[in-house]
Image 1 (cartoon, one colour):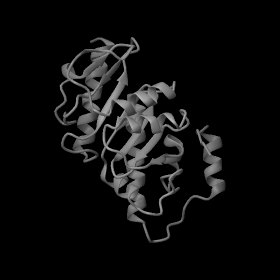
Image 2 (cartoon, rainbow, N blue to C red; image 1 turned 30 degrees about the vertical axis):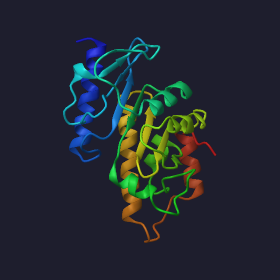
Image 3 (tube, rainbow, N blue to C red; image 1 turned 180 degrees about the vertical axis):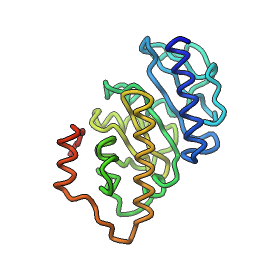
Amino acid sequence: MSEMSDLRECICMFARTMHGRGLTHGSTGNISARTPDGGLLVTPTGSSFLTLDPARLSHFDAELNLIDGDKPTKEMPLHRAFYDTRGTTGAIVHLHSAHSVALSMMPDVDEDDFLPHLTPYPIMKLGRVKLLPYMLPGDAAIGEAIRGLAGKRSAVMLANHGPVVAGKDLEAAVYAIEELEASAQLAMMTRGQNPRLLSDDEVARLVETFDVEWDA
């Protein structure tokens, strides 16, 4: 099996596992990944993570011209923005996961550091997550907002919508967005109970030890 065929199968496999665990639902969410020749494979518009067909993924060349497959997700502006501004990006995952969306609606969330510092792994895998204001799904303004971050964040949370994570490859992006949702779930579970957060010194040690991108 070729690298391209392997990548098509992996996109569909990861999508099914995320759908099966309730991380997205219906026809929500989208994935893109760099192909070996510098192009992109993207999940089609209106498709379900549960029933993706590897042969029907939207296939773009290196200039982002659609070569074959179905029409891509309407969220292409946010995908392009990450690829254009973060040179290390090999894949992007966008979900409508419930706990992270719920947390994004809370009035006291820190826009520059969306996830409270409850456990080490979100810090290690995501750095600071930027909360972006609500915009119409598919709006080019989402891409412009991501471009405005100048590649300094690997993850953003679209308020009242869902998280977006860029990773070095598909596996890394999937694992990171799962960590984001799990951390948001913990935040909602412990909300109002005054949980003990990691201290600033503990966060700083994580950032230094694991070489975390930690944009101020």
